[in-house]
Length: 86
Picture 1 (cartoon, rainbow, N blue to C red):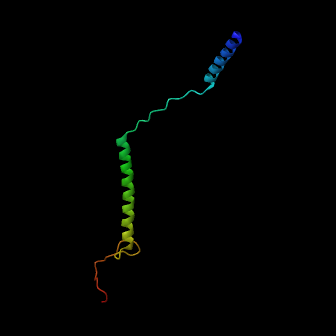
Picture 2: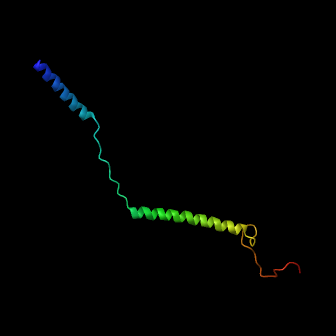
Picture 3: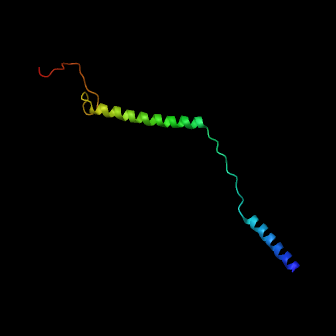
């Protein structure tokens, strides 16, 4: 029985070695370096662009709805009489 036990133990060790050779090796994760100031600056630029677009849209809408303008363009003030009639 001693020989059989040694053979079984040897086969188990060989099987474990074969399994560990077939198992995928664990890759070390890459460390991500972030520049917090650059990220904050990029976020600020994006926020500024969105705010500027919104302000431009509001300004354009005000110009279109102004009583001084005609058809969404600037009013045509020729400098003539501003009263009705003759």
